[in-house]
Image (cartoon, rainbow, N blue to C red):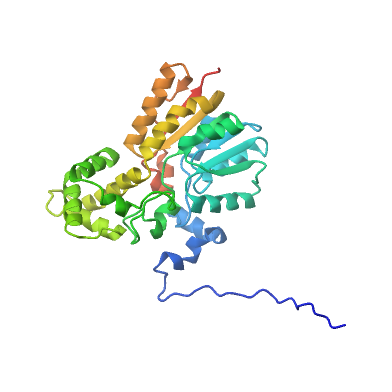
Length: 356
């Protein structure tokens, strides 16, 4: 009888796509950034110089957070902002495969990558569960799984989002002006810009980013949109800031443009993702999802966020729901700021749930 079985073919080798020049110019060509886990030596070399390797994220104030949370094996915890999973990995190590850590995130792209990365480290569904959920809805998760002994919320934007030009989070790289944490929901930032009046945009820039030249930037953007200028890319928005600050009297115009561009992108990102609203909702629900004696730590990166956290912690402390709250903010050490420049604006506050 004729043997009809197909001969097994050896796996084909696919050569990495090559690019012109010495270094790749486009993000999609940067094979190390797209697969950072394969290039550990390169990543460490970049980190040793005080930089964050593109495609990765360095967790901030890890030891300080662990010292406060006092995680014990067998406890149940929640990481409200999974991101690259640096904080989750550190908290999972403290659990010693006893208990459970839940993590939420609204970014379906990065959360799937992180879940796979941590699974390879041995953290499967028996100890670690990822939920594609806005942290404003943590009460739904607590209702299903029970209260948490420890909770962390890191409100910073993940470096992977900042570094990927397709996400539109930074003026430093050209890409679509999107800025959505979940690119499958809501409208991109370039559409949102068309909805603002000059007064509304001025107020948004002031409230969300404390932008000193909010009026000039808003006037320029709204005027240009009315005249048919298409502000649909990160570069186009950056040029609006450049134009707005041309006649402003500042000691260092280049530095002023750099900072105002960063603040403009920050303000628009906060608006697009309703970050203040969802943070307020989280803060209102936190005392009720914590177990008696449970601990919560929150990392903020903007004065508006920190004010909300401080006010909420103080309110619930006065109400008796929190037994103890941080008297002052804790900041990353100078050594950490040197190793990771993105840690500089971080502020850590914490609270302890009353024993009832």
